[in-house]
Structure formats: structure tokens, C-alpha cells
Image 1 (cartoon, rainbow, N blue to C red):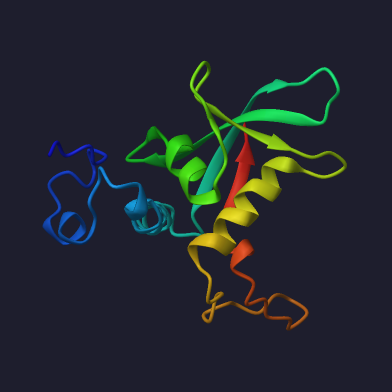
Image 2: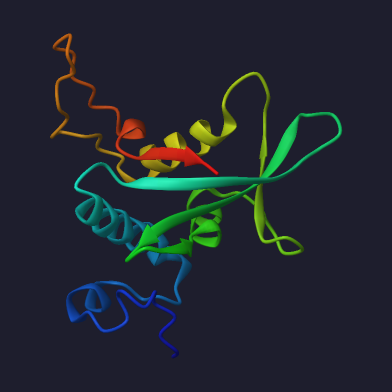
Length: 146
């Protein structure tokens, strides 16, 4: 079986021992590992960058690509996100189609990914200035639109 791991993890015994990089069922674990490494590099919450490639004429859906930055290089995670969230991958432009309007669909996609990857929430949530603590895993990952 070929190892399709991102270059940052291809030679990391600890990561490779727990993840079958060719198995779609391992994508949640793979994404959690990549997001943890991304957060460690940035000394902050992990960041997913979203590129909007297309909006339908009706405005009811859009095609998105998602990336993280590892060692100052963008890594396309669109396929893994599609598998984890159950979205269809458009093989013509390698995007996921997200349907909806009236809200920030980039945020929505990343928020849903956080909730799916961390189903038990965020027990280590920090308190904000008002003293409120959010254990909602959807807020564990930040997004930026490119």
C-alpha cells in the first residue's frame, strides 16, 4: 500500500502508526493530527483557509477548497473534509459544494468540521473577557477566507 501521507507526517512513526493514510475512515484522525500540528506551529488555534471557487447563478450553493498551512506551505485538505462531512467532491474543480444562503458558509463548513472531529467538545476551553467558556467544538478551529 502506498503511503500518501503529507510530507510532514510521511516519516513520523508516531503518526503513521495510528493512521492508514489510504483509508477514508482514518481521515478524521488524520485531520486532527494535521490541525494539532498546525496549531503548534502557529501557537494558536488551528486555522483552515477557505477559497471560494464558484457560486451558482441562484446564489444557493458555492464550491469551496480548504487548506491548512504546514511549514509555510499550503496543504489541500478538501478531499479529507469532504469525506468527514459527507459532502460530494466535485472532481472537475476539486471542490466541495456547500448549499445554503443567508450566513457565512465558509464559517459554517469549518464549524461543522470542528463539531465532527471533536464530538466531545472542548474541555480545555478558555474563558473570554466576559468569563464565558464555550465547550462547543465548532469554535476550536478558526477560518480565514482567501
